[in-house]
Image (tube, rainbow, N blue to C red; front, side):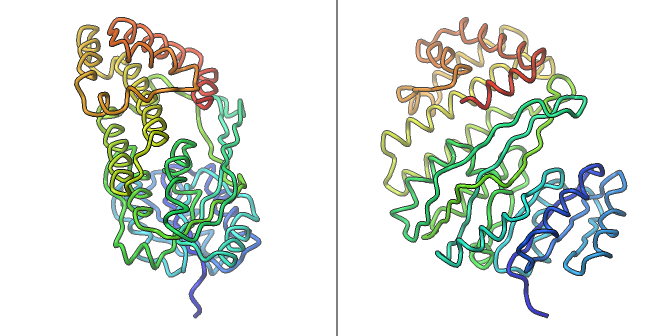
Length: 355
């Protein structure tokens, strides 16, 4: 049996209403030389049965039922063990892909056999009644790069646009991925960006497509029903540090890079301050203000704060408070953002994307 050109690994957990649509968006691609690997991560609903039903109707589908729930990173890693394609895509099971996406990606590979292909997306925001409330296109100009020198300045710009970290807007050269022995780390929130940073560290070719075929479904049910990650701040400071280290290792840590990283830094600090207002943080007002005060002594603050020039309204004022080291103003602004996030989630989603 010939090996497929593309392997699509799709972890599955708790997505019964969306699974058929996600799988069909792969199996009905105009590009047919692919396989779909469904990884049932001990889903508590009918997802396991649905996976088997999908496999019965298409010989290109493989199903892996994990014996215990291990999370997204483990499911992707397990799926990779079954993959046989030349390129690999990691797809979420509650989203969907336009049917010509993979053909366009393969066409670009025929023009420039790249280690990595990246495309854009459409963020689709749904309210608690599952109604589409807003949609935002996230794209990037088309480029086909065939050297490290050409592509490296664009990595940080892709991160600025939030297109670097996501996994489902990429085709990875699977042979190269295996050569580097890359796997997803068992860590919350930042497993995607850590994987991407490791992959691009030494690549010499990259295709960026100016298309937005991926539909990223986002539920704007913030508040107490959303997941609270206690080490949110530490995790995102680590991701920024990794990107900073990458550009220093490349000898490209120029002012533009520091400006972009500084704006990303303020964005995540803003989010951390407002998250501390959540009762689940266990922090009282005094502790929240001490958290802000401690920021001023950190390496990233001292390294980046002088380069901040945010365009986003949601972080522009806070960046001034941070630069002035005004603890009370930072606290009050974070508290205001927390109120908007929980009481006016659609407005918050729009403001957040307008960054």
